[in-house]
Structure formats: structure tokens, C-alpha cells
Length: 65
Image (cartoon, rainbow, N blue to C red; front, side):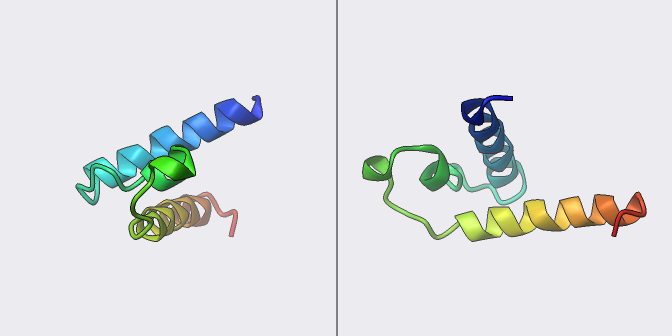
């Protein structure tokens, strides 16, 4: 995968978590849009924490932790 594809995939995933879990429409914008277009960074950590916890739960279920 190219770097741009990885970033696009992360943006889609974080946007999905932001919208479906937290109901924050613009939560992933600060990572996925140019800095000049951003106005808020307050939700990114919540989205990242959720993704991190989900990954760790999956790893634990699979015996990888």
C-alpha cells in the first residue's frame, strides 16, 4: 500500500468511528484535511483511543497480547 492509501484508509476508519460511535461529524477532519482548513482538534484523541482499544481487544481475543 502506498502512504497516501494508508492515510486515506485511516481517514475513512477514523471518520466512521467519529460518525457512528461518537456522532461527531467533523471529528476526523483535523488529521485528514490540510491544517489551514481545520478549526478544532478536540475530538481526535477520543477517536484514536477508541480505535486503539478495539485493536487491543481483538489482539487479546486472538492471543496476541
